[in-house]
Image 1 (cartoon, rainbow, N blue to C red):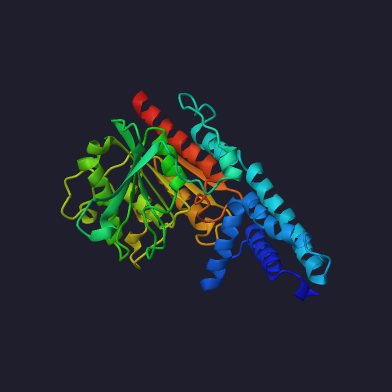
Image 2: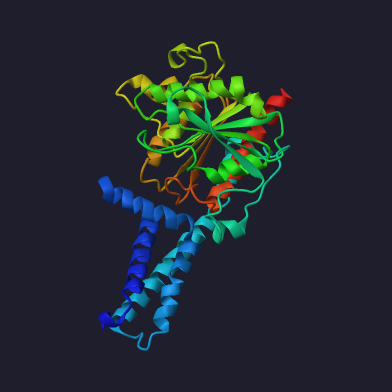
Length: 379
């Protein structure tokens, strides 16, 4: 009988089963239901082995029971086996699509794009067994540096190698959160720590969660801070990549497409806010204020810098179709390369954990940046 079964075991396998279904077949839904389905599926989609191991303790305890073959026990076992099979499919999909980032780079930059760019390899142990380890010991984080006088919303963190090298290229990053939440120390940590360990100076900034164009102005202020103060932390302000996720992708693309426009730089119009290139992951590129000029797409021109755009084809928060439209407009107008990396079976915030997919994308971001820099040096 069900009463003879530890309730914890049955709840564990039910939660695991539901999360696995959300990972295999993600669906958009309104309100809290959609958010819950996204969170459950995203986590399992990136760390399937950890999710599978999560159910092991309860299973062992159930098998040690005097009478595990109750109807409830059999039901739980069936759900568990089906969930494990589903998690195997999730893991297989991640491994199967591992060559997609490289293929996207080749398609946009040519088959010899890696000339002069040092290749990297994922850490499989971290990816499958230790994806929660998002930080690195060889990187230090300098916290809560003020880039303006607006309190905690005008603070940034700097990530740099503990040896504190000088003349580092800059990677300025903006978090997501639908312009209503988010913080500088939560997202894309595997990417920021990876780049900092490789000699980059990474900047991750808060910004005002108010209205357009306040957050755009803040993004520009961060770029201005890099120009004026970055060198004291080891930055080379002549090499600045702007990046962001979700809402941060909006900010990164907007900033990259509107260099030195006075309307977005009140009080600091004379500071150069142009960037070397832009990296946008699962970004939102639509309007935010009912104003047609509030979309990054309204500012696309032939003067756009190189872009790397990454989006998962299973994203339930920002439909991939929106990103395809933005990329098409970029490619049609820009004279510079636009690399579009559409990741099979990837959800929103796929890079939160130090997963295989996150590591592969981080390495290609580094390689893309290396390609852009080597190309500029060759000119």
